[in-house]
Length: 233
Image 1 (tube, rainbow, N blue to C red):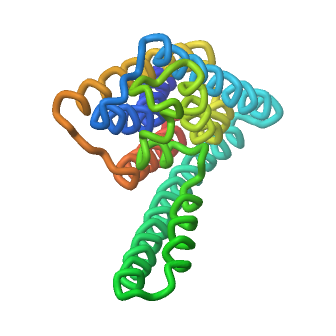
Image 2 (image 1 turned 60 degrees about the vertical axis):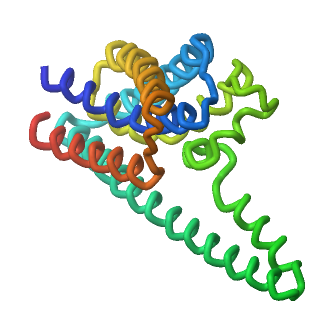
């Protein structure tokens, strides 16, 4: 029963990113079709299945006590790293914006515009092209054909960006002996609901969830999950 509750917490925290990205797409009126939504959920579920299976194999070679300690430690470490990475990305993003503002000022007073061009290049490379932060901060980049609709091909890039972000968490959960089939199925269901609900809110209420808030919330939930798993194995 305790692992079932943990599975719900894990799936919820893993899909905070999916929800935030979907909200951003709703705000931009970039429609996510049902098939694209199902594809994102399928890739997320397969990523969960793979990472849980790897963790489960590792756990077989460890005693229950060591597996519990290691699995919990991995979850806590990944949660801390996720928060740190989110804050670091935000710091770099703000630094880029400051450089861009200075470059525009130089252009405005007639100085060499080369610095402005370089600033634009830095900004475009400051966010990984295959990361949920990229899709969150620049939703229109995923719509490569500018159709206003996220098709299956474009959904694949989004799906992998979201899934890669959660692989380490799945390994830690696998070591902690989470139920693989149940957690995988739950991930699929949560992903479908997160994307559908996030898009609806963004489209109807023009809500905005920043990358920093989504990353910190997700990281805190993973840390809480690791602590919970340690004390209630």
